[in-house]
Length: 144
Image (tube, rainbow, N blue to C red; front, side, top):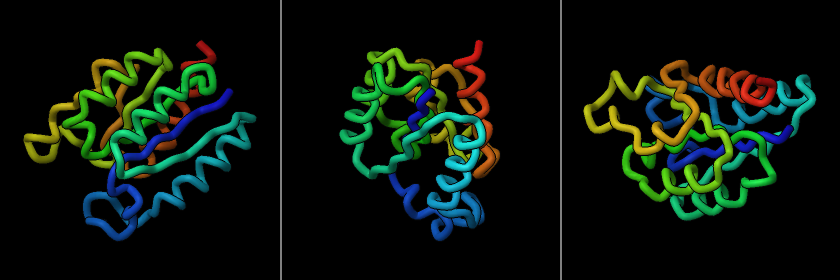
């Protein structure tokens, strides 16, 4: 089993950007922990981050036939990107939407997710644990 983790804009700044909202943990810390979990579970994973919407779309398009599950933290693109929504819908790879913060408890414009309707589920509000919960969910998707 191969899992693709995609991370959107500004997530490369984790640990320094608004730590009161996003925490102290860096994206590299999260990736390292996920790699440990993947090794323990006997699965492979790819972990990527981009500030560019088109690059994320390309990676989603390339996932078909290569990855069993996509886990995506689209960050700000969650609320604006029809392109990401269309790409997720087109590739038909089960996708899990994740967020570090609870987007439904934040500013009004963050309450709407453009991608939620084409994802298998959404995990939000658990900080870095959102990633680890999504990893467990990804394993469950492929075992069911």
